[in-house]
Length: 148
Image (tube, rainbow, N blue to C red):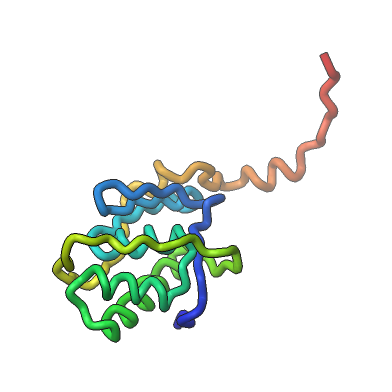
């Protein structure tokens, strides 16, 4: 399980993501799997992008949603564990950004969920493995190309 002071960052070399209207959409470019995080899950993703500590993310969520802080902590930890397992985020020591709490009244709480879609993985992967290609590339002689 994640530590309260741990901070995470999106694996930008392998993951393309965007938050639109409180929903985060992410694609693992290596596997082609895509993900949707809406509601509180989308907000948690946005806070992860700011590299906040897990405890700070849970605190912000408890301030913005109608949820007890203990429930917020447990749900944030669970979602982060899922994001790590899916290879979307990694632990980081980079400095955190500042979190701006969204005002205007607390929103209704729905436990955050990571929606996973693997149905188009073969089409979305940028560099899908081709059987035998890696072996053929290793065995092919490398010939320097003349400069023009």
